[in-house]
Every structure is written in structure tokens, then in C-alpha cells.
Length: 422
Image (cartoon, rainbow, N blue to C red; front, side, top):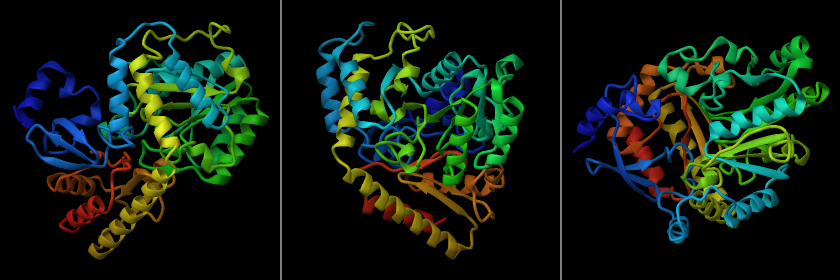
């Protein structure tokens, strides 16, 4: 079966034909390619068309597809079984490695996704502080947990909906929304609800309204506000952790979070997540403390094996990050030059291997409102053209594109040549 036949039939058995909304290419007049394999910086669809992949499974494939060390370690682990629902040495090995190589992480709890990590971190913060309310930022997406689906970034924006049906008002009554990079909006909320706020959760490098890095002064004041009000600061590094730097986005700021969430990259492409932080907070989790969180598949041996192989390889090869920065900067320059020659207004935000091209006449894109000024028709034209040229990009103006260690001169040149033909 070809791409179109598979997608059309999929709509009979899966809502929208997909298992995650953005994959459906809603708003575009084309069916999504159906991917059957990947290798290095490339993926191949059921029509045997080859693409340079700038999505990388939405970030996890930092080492590229089918990394030989990750794959071989998983094959060895498969010989021992798939799941036990019991303690294993592998989960200790990964937890120990993370605690020893990351900053501000004394203990970790493994889970199976970014959504699990963030919702569990918020529950922990509430249990630790004895408070109910949290502050999130418009445009930041922390997973599909009910309490987060307010001004939630890419999925909601792309779908053209204000939030999500099926979320009771009571589920979001304790979620307070501030404006990203606007400390005055945070101060106003603390002035009104300070004694009730358990935590502030933020993507230090946002990726779900497009890439926007928090400003240094904003982050410093945010930390000070949390300290003054005895609220916890949670960094959602599901997307930026291990990607913008091995130690994540927190290494880019002079700010220490109380809790950090991880996922995507740490599993090397397998379903994986974790949250960690200060020992006195983490020890409040059951069975050490009274805050209950559990998962049958948490710490799955195959997933832990993939995570160990991925993180050890990233940690021992700092040149990977240097190369990604090199080629990310090269790609950014190429796009700016080409679009300038074409007279197309744009802003490019990039942090390491995360980048978004915003089609806007704004001079900067720093907030959720800035993002909403983008020309979606122009983005759709750009995306459709690039896909036809064999360049696989996120099908939404409000997402990030990603580079892997396998992207190099050849891939950047191919991207540039395709863009010139726009």
C-alpha cells in the first residue's frame, strides 16, 4: 500500500488516522507521508521517497536514526526479556548516571513519557508545599494532563481550538497563566495568590510555540519570586534536556530549578521520561513519603538500556554538541540569506539544535502573542514545497525543527537548494 492508501484506511480505525494530532497535517492540502524506516539523518516513506529528517521523532533522535550503539545494546537486552515490573540493575545504572552527570538532580523517578513526568512533578510540588495552585506560561506545552491544557501551544494552536474539550473547569481552576518573558505578569499573580502557589512550571527554552528562549533577567527574577513566596520552580526540559546542551537548558542560565522533567531524548527514541531534583523533595514520593505515583512499565529494562547507551554516548562526546551548533548556525545563516533575497519577512529563533523559522513581520518573537502574528498561509506554502523537495519538517508553524549529529554539509546544502526554489 502507498502513503495515501494507508492514511485513508487509517482514518477508519484511528481518530483522524493518527495517534497524535499534529501527524495528520491538518490545515494542509496533502496527506502525510507514512514512514517505514530511518537511517542517520534520513527517513523513507511507504512510497520509497527519501527525506532529510529535520523532525527526528520530535526531538529524540539526537544521535540520528538507527544509532549502532543504541540498537546493539537493545538487541542484547531483548535476550533477557521485555518487562518484569520489578527492580532491575539497569534502572539503577541509568538513575545513577543521570544524578552524577546532571546539575541539581539528587534523585530521579523514571516514568514513561513527558506528560507523566510533568504531571507527576506538579503533584510532588503540591504535596511538598501543601498548596494547590500552579503557574504556567501561555504557549508552553507540558503534556495533555488536564491541568496543563490552557494556552498550551502548538497542538492547540495548530488545531485552532482554545483548549480541549473533555477538560472540566475544575481541573484547570488551580492553573494560573502568565506571559512568557513578562515578569510583571508573574508578579501580578504572586501578589494575588502567593500563599496558594505550589510551583511555577516553565520550558526554559520553549519549543511548542516555536523555539523561544527565556531571557536571562526574566529567569533570575522568576527564581527570586519563587524563593520569596516559598514556591518551587520546575524546569520542563522534556524537549531541551540533553539537546540544547548535555546538562540541558538550565546550564544556559544562572538559575537552579527545584525539580526538572526529562523525556524524549533520554530514551534514545523509546517511550521514556523522568523527573528529578532536590533530595528533600524527591524523598516525599511513595514509598519513602506520602505522595503516591506509580507505573507498571516505569524503568522498563529495554527502555533503560536505550537510555544508558544514549546518554553515555552523548556525555562522552561533547563534540556532538559543537557540531550541531556549527551546522545549526550554518542553516540559520542560509535561511536568512535566501529569504532576504526573496523579500520574505521572517524571524529565526535557534538554541543549539532546536530552531523555528517564523513567517512574521515582527522584529522579534519573544512571547505567545508574537507567535500569533505569523503568516500561516505562507508557512503552509513553505512546508508543502519543502516536503515535495524531500525535506521533512514539522507540519506546524508552532513547532521546532531539530538537527541530529548526522546532519552535515550535504544536508544543509540540500535544504538551501530546496529553499531557493520556493
